[in-house]
Length: 108
Picture 1 (cartoon, rainbow, N blue to C red):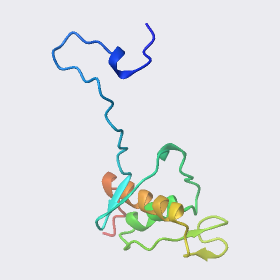
Picture 2 (tube, rainbow, N blue to C red):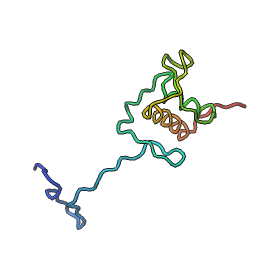
Picture 3 (cartoon, rainbow, N blue to C red):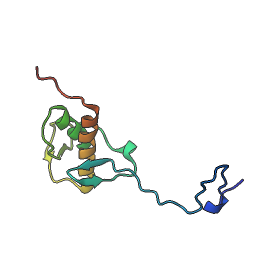
Picture 4 (spheres, helix red, strand yellow):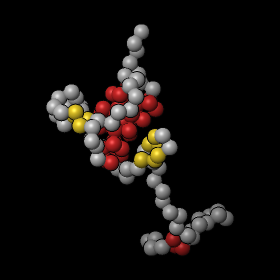
């Protein structure tokens, strides 16, 4: 059977939806009341020095968020602080992923 429209869907139960429900992707991060979106979180660049990497490192070392990255790797080349919207989202994604994992440097 080929489904060509929502009304072609049949179920055994009494609750059948024949109207499409708008898809709202889950935000990848909520930071200070703002939602950041990215439709393809599996392909965020995670190389050393990338915005995602630096966000995770700032969280790991318990530093406050400070969106930045290094073009040539961690602490190599110029520190870039004027990020594009996408790079900033990647930074906060890295920060939040580490916060969610609870992986922090032990200073004891």
